[in-house]
Image (cartoon, rainbow, N blue to C red):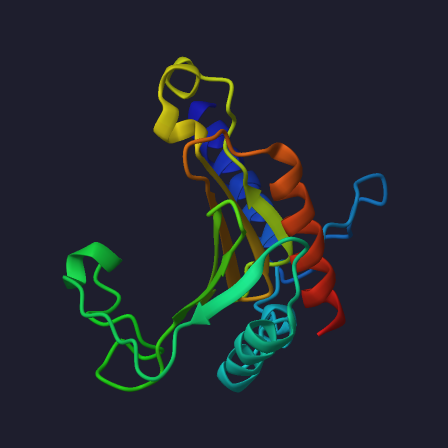
Length: 200
């Protein structure tokens, strides 16, 4: 009797295996949400949202000539070749020169515009070109609510902010001489710079 059970069990197991592997597709369960498989689609939106290097140069030239700021007078902007050599480790191995391709060319990726007010307050606007877009945003305006800021006069004479526009970082630095940097000064500059860039 046990031999018959063994044979019957083996036959039943074979039938189950054969019917399970007969190539019939399993019907989808309509009660489950159909989640599409991820696709490897190239995201071109960031590329489209980037300024070309020529557009970056035009933005810098236009800001140098046409950006007028209340109570500040234009002093100068970087001119000619301003290539800076760096230790490649400082750029996480990306480049050894602050140029578009990281090689000795005249395609520098940083420019500066300098303004001055009658009370000797300096305003520095740096435009930094990046290969990839990072979007449009305000990404830095450090708090003044620290003990060090309250104690150190040198920190009180400095205010800075950073904006991103497509693939350009705009760093704004206010440096006062002997007095505390005023919040209203930075607010005014931020408003003027963002309005100028939006219209460009």
